[in-house]
Amino acid sequence: MTDKYLEELNEAQRLAVINTEGPALVIAGAGSGTTRVLTYRIVHLLRQQVPAWRILALTFTNKAAGEMRERISSLVDPEVARFIWMGTFHSIFARILRAEGTRLGYKSNFTIYDSSDSKSLIRSIIKEMGLDDSVYKPGAIASRISASKNNLITASIYASDAGLQEYDKAARMPLMYEIYKSYAARCFRANAMDFDDLLLNTNILFRDFPDVLASFQEKFHYVLVDEYQDTNYSQYLIVKKLAAARRNICVVGDDAQSIYSFRGARIENILEFRNDYPEYKLFKLEQNYRSTQTIVNAANTVIANNEGQIRKNVYSKNEAGENIHVMQALTDTEEGFNIASDIFDKKYSRQLNWSDFAILYRTNAQSRIFEETLRKKNIPYKIYGGLSFYERKEIKDILAYFRMVINPEDEEALKRTINYPKRGIGDTTVTAIFEQAAETGTSAWQVITGSPGGLSRFNHGTNAKILSYTDLITTFRRDSAETEAFIKAREIAMGSGIIRELREGKSPEEVSRYENLEELLNGIKIFTESAETNGEPTSLEAYMATVSLLTDQDNEKSEDRDKVTLMTMHSAKGLEFRHVYIVGMED
Image (cartoon, rainbow, N blue to C red; front, side, top):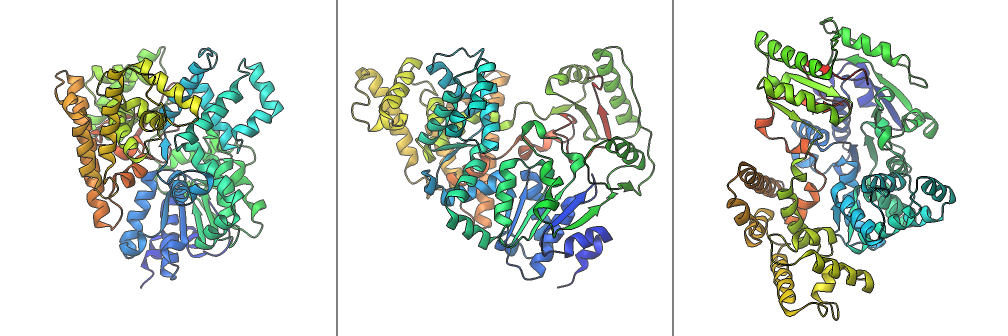
């Protein structure tokens, strides 16, 4: 095999690729080819006869992992590339927990709760405790629990920490610890983990079972991490433990791009890498291939004011480019009108695509005025950070049925499916089921299927309706492990009555819901065919293990591509557009 791929790199990139032994810190300015360096470093390891399954590569997005895997497969045998452990932190740790989570008391088919599932459960707990949800706000509670988990503070540690109790009392939430305790217990009872549990439980697994940690340390001889400046404390500890035996760790990042501290990212992780690994090698990628000289120079001027930074001299050999324009407006309405007009004029005068334009703002609430002005000019647009495809009601409804088939202990899925489509099981009945589950320390599913006296408090008519539901789920569960995901998904969509209900709708909204369901089923068909081709599991459980960690950007439709993009600056990180408008700068 030749090393022609190395000829595609500049000298700094080449050195970062070929120096594979020992700890390496790659400081990479924006647009300097970080993905290429990580990709080619993996290719170089494979060319040096390192077995693919000895390599662990962690990214922050499914898109980044997919692009890297695709590029690697074009340079080495795809059959070899597919054995690399590559994916997001959450997907890789979920994979580890499905294999070893039984040690913590979980079954391998645990459900992964998304943020709406978590908030729904928290709302239920607040209601059951008789608390005021204007004081104990579900969103704030969820954020507090998330921050605690990312700092390895479990519910029991939280309850015994005097400082945290004082903080909560000052915030008029003295029972916060009880909510956290109940939330953790209910998730465990439902055989469910939220996103933060995937990190917390991996840490606990490695801490309490040294043999498991040792087995993964032995498995992964090389650990690579993208966007290291965005890692939180929990992720940092796991990576450090996995790399401890061989210390072949390569992290790529840029302290100047650390913008996620509000969700737990610690810039200290990258700044203190030299202390964790004194023998480390430092590589700086300073040539920007993406932007004009004007933009790079402007960014350097701003970054120069950062304190405690790792110094680098980012430069561009591209053309000087247009000057950065400052557009002043007296009101947000005028600002929206001016930007929409400018986009319209540039699009047609320069023969551009709508997708060449992006409007960036600080918070999603700022999008309204720009949506209105774009609509008035019939300019197509899409919003990232709005309602995800997977958050739409019709999608969450059918996914809840899938979840019940895989894990009937999933209480949030049971709540969503037990009376949808309507079968006459009201809220009072559902509340009574969950009250009995709490009293007996069992799951709601056990109450309605096998718990002694489980249905004794209900009348004959209600019992018949509940029995109809449990029979339906039990029927769907038969042979689900052996049946292909698409066949089982279509069976559930038809048998549950969801397709019939959506197909009968006549309004534009109802037609759209039906089309979304068909789009989901089409996606499952593609998943099944791809998995079969690659020799991977094709079951519904395999599909759900993947889809539970997807985002709306992973499900972008082709018809959404030629549109003006509206998104927060945080969401735009790593993306490229020919014309960018940064709005609301007075805030």
